[in-house]
Length: 70
Image 1: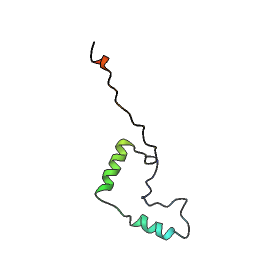
Image 2: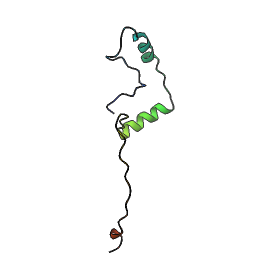
Image 3: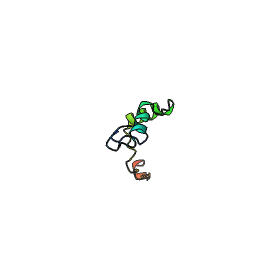
Image 4: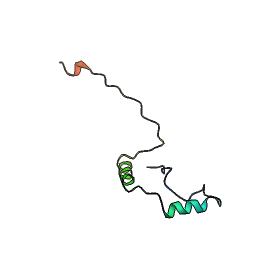
């Protein structure tokens, strides 16, 4: 996964003197959901899901009778 989820606390370029204390607290003691976070991480790792990617176009199945009848 290339992008970081928005709910993952981090210290990056957007950290300022005004919000550094709040960010440091979130990094030190993150709100961690022990039930769903490991599952989401596993699914992200298997399928390489990009949350910012546009949705895929809908595909419709169109049967082709000639492939079943010779």
